Length: 209
Image 1 (cartoon, one colour):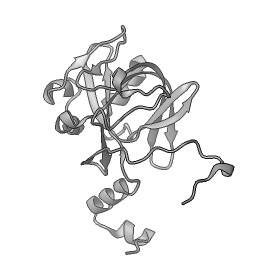
Image 2 (image 1 turned 60 degrees about the vertical axis):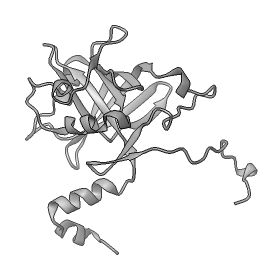
Image 3 (image 1 turned 30 degrees about the vertical axis):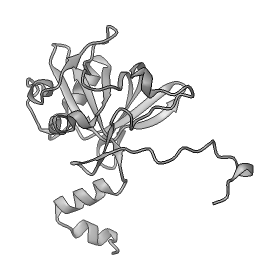
């Protein structure tokens, strides 16, 4: 099968959306927790989280345009400068997925999807109690992407909570051990299985293939 640009553009909108959202393969599955200055909590599933650097520890994610549809996650982050990133596990994947429903701002996805807000280390934004790997983020900058009006949100890690048992001496995190899931497209979830671990690659130390 060969789909060129013209064929893709002529597709049914929903089919095109599903294909293009799936071509990157498995993406990280996270819930981003925020709170407004008047105490309204928000929780939303995101699959665009990306590592931007380790020193300082920067992570980014993409927010859709905040024009025709209000983006409560984006609004809350701009309002008070903090948010949480929470890994999704197999035990609550259904609840996590349905946080993507477009609830009014005054309705909390924590309540509607039966997930528990948790406040740790005097951090203002709510973590997800059910998640075993939680990250507290400080907002740094929002970079508009002119081509499609999305926004790259960049933040710095302030807090990291995870089980002792899933962290190796070298600093590797056992995602299979905490039953993490990944996302393909917009609504298909996959379990994670570790299949290999290799040493740092050096040109003069290549193995036999």
